[in-house]
Length: 229
Image (cartoon, rainbow, N blue to C red; front, side):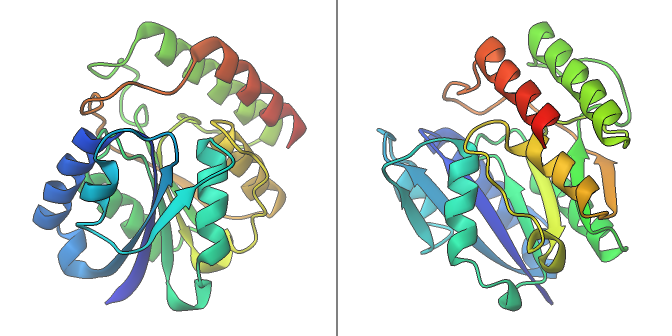
C-alpha cells in the first residue's frame, strides 16, 4: 500500500474531529492506503480537539507563537519526511469533507496528476446546503480572478481539500500564513508547471464549531495573494 500523510490544521474542532474519526474508520482510504495523520493544534484551542486528534495520531504539533491555516501547514511541512510518503493531503478539520472525497483526490494522484483538489462546484453550480450566498459569491469571484491571473481554470479556489505527490509538494515553498494558503498554492503550481486536476467532491455543512473565515477581511487578503503569487 502507498503511504499517505494527511495534514489537518485544528482550532476548536472537537465535533468535526469526532466525525472524521468515524468516517475514516469506515472509509476505503483506511483499507487501501497506509495513512498517517499530522494534526496542528492552535494554542488558542479551548475544547477537547487534542483528545480526539490523539485517537488518530501521535503526530500532534502545538501551533504556538503564530496562528493561521497557512502557518499550521508550514509547521507540519517542516517535520514531514517526504521520502517516507507517496502522497500528502491537506484536509479541513470541520468534517465538511468526507474520506470518500479524499479517496477521489488520491485516485486522481494515482492516475498521474501532480496536484489534485476537491471542487464543490465541479459538477454543479448550485450552492451546497449550508453554504452562505456570500461565501459562494466570494469564492466564485476569487476563483475567476485566479483563473485569469494564472491562465488555468479553477472552479473552487477556496476548497479545503488538496492532494499532492511528495515530489510536487516538495517544489512548493509556501509563505502564506492564513486563508490565503489556497490562492498561493494555485499560483505556485502554475509557476512550477505542475499538472493540477480538479475533481468533483461532496461538501457538507461544518460539524459544530464556528467558521474562522472572515468573509471581507480574508477575502481581501486572498485577493492580494492571487495578485502577488
